[in-house]
Image 1 (cartoon, rainbow, N blue to C red):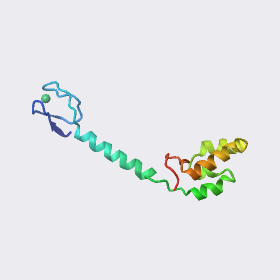
Image 2 (cartoon, helix red, strand yellow):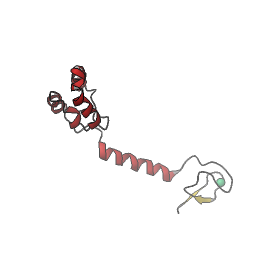
Image 3 (tube, rainbow, N blue to C red):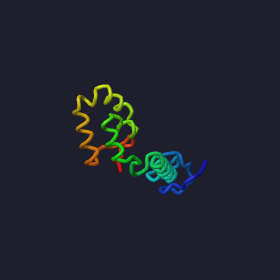
Image 4 (cartoon, rainbow, N blue to C red):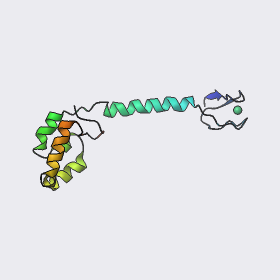
Length: 113
Ligand SMILES: [Zn+2]
């Protein structure tokens, strides 16, 4: 268990408590938690990245087969798309426009390349 110094009374307190047990002040800065947040962000970006790895041209070609949503990892809406035949073509049109305008996103909510 690591210790931090209370900035109000200067006594050593355990880093995982929110309130100083000596003076009763709430500790605003919690250095250990701040480090954990940064690590978590890095982990998320390792999974999803900052730019989608999916190419919009591949998605556009697959759009004609109704399989573009599978290639970007959106399986649930992909099945829905196939089951409704692209909502009778309307959904196909909307997705086609979104792919070209860069609004079509993958399963990590990132725009396609
Ligand atoms: Zn204190």
